[in-house]
Length: 619
Image 1 (cartoon, rainbow, N blue to C red):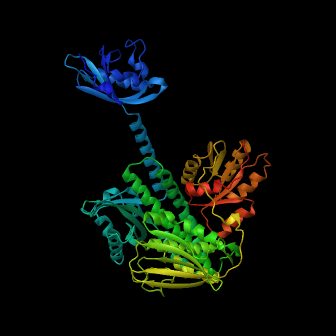
Image 2 (cartoon, rainbow, N blue to C red):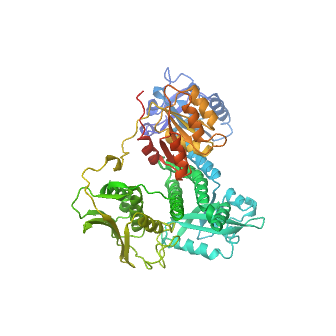
Image 3 (cartoon, rainbow, N blue to C red):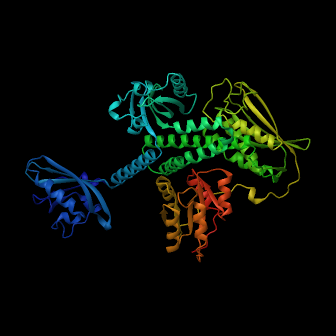
């Protein structure tokens, strides 16, 4: 009569033919029904007993009652499955030729979960975009149709009704002196000469004023011929920062303070961007979503690199950089710097080699290992960036008892080797393979002078470049200090029984920190102020407190001091977190006996490195 045999082989679909017109008492079912649900007393029980929500029961009854006027009814809901498992199903009720009713069920639990996760991901991304004041655009270069979101419009004092959603909405508002540079940078990216499009230009606001806009984007889809058909990116109003920068340049005495403040103001939203992108990258997303998250992550990393370079060049030019020189095994420092870029070199299929021509297992010199690491890292990063095929090599050798370290590559070479070390200068007359800060080699040259390292450069266009560092006289060094060696964080820190408290006045930072910490701690609580944190610590035990430095009213240092004054039998370990990357901010934490500090923005990897250094008592 009813052949459900083919459905009986399905792992997602089952069917029931009903005895009654209310679709509550089953008559015949597909053979696989026992995989999904259990009906007591064979098929004499009421099916609606499997529905847990009264609203679902009422909705189903209403749908069945309307079948006399409709060919079918379709709805979805949760039911009690076998072994107490809750299933999400989609039910379609149809009438057979004889007037009976048949329900075809599709089990959609996984699909329902993915849909909820996608909605949660979209909500979190929307929160980050709103909190960081980023406007979105999505451009089809073939048709010049562009989708601009509401934040993009509001940035220019416009409403969505004012937009035609074409390229003219942007192009007609760009300052005439800036439009040529915009299209030049766009074409460099379209032609594959730079990885990202990035340009700062002026745009006319609805009130007639000019606003500085930081425009970033990337091609995310091309047609079969390689022509771009989807180009997406963000707009950020950086007028305040641009004007502040100009004022700082005109007042050199206040430049250092400006850079530090700019760093703090950008790092705060950047922490939200990179932290959320790090969280999203570990979720099951569609390929397009994964690609967009990658754009956010890489763009944010470029911005963080720019901030670090600006702070370093500021301190170097102001003479505020303090060296910490000591007797070290330089091979440990070089090995550590080399390891940082192995993955990046591998992704470009480069021959990446560290060659020790000294035959020594340890080489002692007197220097600042942190700054040497910075010099070598800059040189290796540049070599990899400007080398598309061939090799990048780090070589160590001894000549006349002096240590020579060289970084060589087979990349694009440098046309003007005299101008390359100038601050804010980029690769002379050559078109850079990707945009950088223009500060890296200036920092390298200045650090080498402070460290008394001789620096020489040889390069040929399209044939490669070699930087050679004369590190000076070597000394015997038989036993390298363990603290100089790179710490491995491959093993996951076990904090599964510990509680953490995050203290921050920024909603986005709290969301990011709580999500990252939830992967390690059994319980993560939040506090929006110093006073709230003190009350929480007084009333409940926390193993670790993540304390933000800049909070209104009572800052992180003051809050930490008051927590220490509580005299708790098991005081928490306090980790200072700050978007202020200056030595002064870190010193204030140190003066208040806070031994652990993490600088925003931080991702799961950086967080794990900090957690691995904690010495928590066993529960």
